[in-house]
Length: 264
Image 1 (cartoon, rainbow, N blue to C red):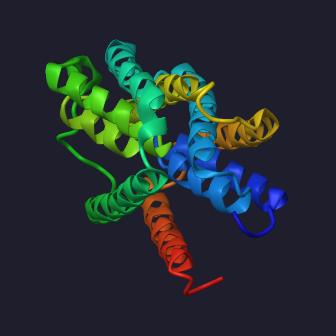
Image 2 (cartoon, helix red, strand yellow):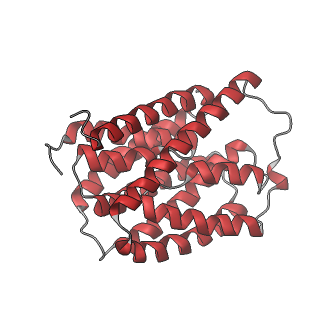
Image 3 (tube, helix red, strand yellow):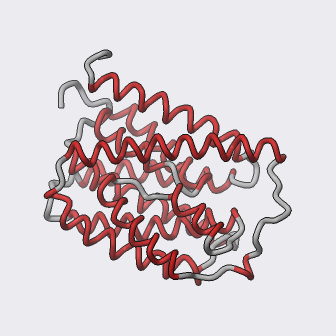
């Protein structure tokens, strides 16, 4: 890729990746891949694999903090994660046969869809004052066959695009598993950890990995995850979602214009 890498900017953005991931239970992975591609100038397939490693380990740090706060439902998260891991590993082993442009196209669709979902949810939450009298109770949560199928799909998508799938997982845990939102966010981080690291392992030996960059990026993102977990009870989530969704749409527009050679 043309241009010059910008490691300082990349590591600052790594902090944002971990921070967002811990606050929302997803979203950091949508930033990680573009950072590797356009800031560190890593080729597409290695960038996808490295994104999975960073997201998996950063989500793991966030999960441990949520677990200590009692906001992880293991009886739902573990079976979901196991199904997702199988889908992620198998797809990663086959991903070398998928054209890079197809992977980037799927990533673009996923990122824009996630941004629009965040905007919709944040406006709905803002109007309701952030409360929902019909929110499910943790005691009602259970793992279902539709969740197993969705987990397989999330795992496969994760390996193809380098994103953890938190914006698919959290609504699924709320609607299908009957988890409260806070427990869904904490449980999503465990699932993302299992899912993304399984996909990363599937890529090992298939693409070159810059282990030094993975380590430094992950370390900074882990610090962001710790900060995000500490603030999760203090920051209005609908405001975070609005700002993050706008940022994704602006970045997506910029990268699309760059591909068309409209902007440098």
